Length: 431
Image (cartoon, rainbow, N blue to C red; front, side, top):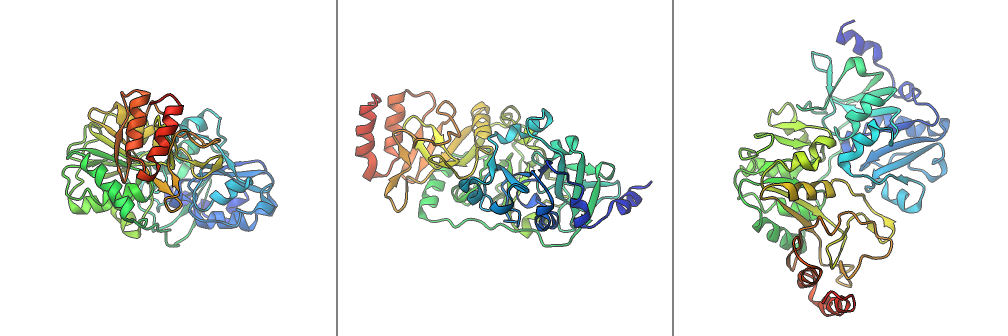
């Protein structure tokens, strides 16, 4: 049977496709816009027909009907990272959370620590050789394809076809549905004076010829917007967003000085605009790879001058970062922050930046605290953190003692909180 004949034989409706899911199955869905809206809508509409089905995903971007506490025993979300669509469910306790490093999710799937019975993914149209591209969410999905009993693709002509280890052959596919729905677009965050100030400090420390990893959020994007005058930058990141596209268009990114995968923009998921999705389509400069490749600290660290830029919610005086919870209340997840902090620390000339506004709630709460709030989920340890940046300056921590770290952190806190932090540091024996 030819690839085209096989394609036709496996084409079906979304309702028929989800009937391949069994009670108790674990359903793997890719990151962000890699999620298949037609299939997840069908699953939501028929969720009461199932029992104990779990949908596992990093960063859900749409709030589908299955996000429903009344039917959580039928179809339940299991977050690998909470996003806007799933956060309320996690905080209310009717969605699950699986702690992880993004780099290790593929191994967790292969080793059976994370189940993968079914894969539901959006995909590009099939090429003449019978291959689809899982370009928008390569991440852990490729590992799940190896393990799953059922693989269902939602084939959409708006999905780009990219190079890299992100291809699946028609012979691996159980069923497919077709859709032509416009892809979800995610705009750049609003950037205010605090974000601009932090971005300026970080931009001053990034040299020409550096390779960038850009985390998710307003402050990392603020850094990107201040790098357009740099030269010969490279990209090795988990997320490819519109900020990176703007650096390519300005001429700042050409990947010519990269020491690992020279000439290539490397990522594992894409989140942005239609223009961005068009840019990566069959672009020889762009390669999408699973997260155990992009986020592996050893591999990413082979890029000299790797600059990793990631945000946090709270930092203590020793540099511990609580980046994924508000005290014990879940907010996001570890994601790739620790992966890339460690990668930058391995990199020759690398720099790992943790960026955070100095205060919250209208300057009433200091995000720099003597100790993290009780119950806070520690995302990145004091041993890994190097640069911490607020709108008041830069603290450089690696190689420094506890007392030196405390002084550095107090110096970048909001001035209204420095005396209080100094007094607390003295009580802790740090000063």
